[in-house]
Length: 145
Image (cartoon, rainbow, N blue to C red):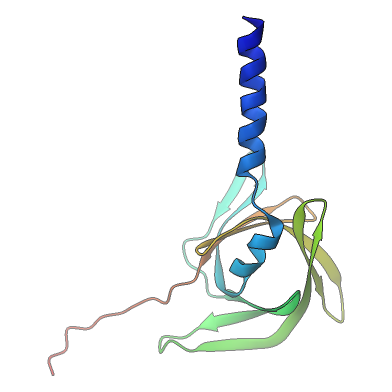
């Protein structure tokens, strides 16, 4: 019976170690347009966003880049706020960290998960932001040509 417990423990550790994403691999997924899906504010509280007026555009080149807030327009274009936050990517303690810097402030966030269509980031206040890849709203009309 003791061996079963030990085997279960070792197997559980193996599964946990395999499920962790390689921070270097996460970098390839960061660039693009991301909209907030939900924010886990605390263990008991999550804010869900059904509609977003603004989208984050992450532009990455190597280990540096910028994040810009943009507002999607009906014609498929974007209006920008003209304020971009410079960013630097660093791998620390087996995690991908994003260091932001503006003329007024600097802070860091930790990437928990990144894929083609999802991005999960934890900030310094332990809030966990769940982003989904932005897809433009398609409005079809029934006009005859």
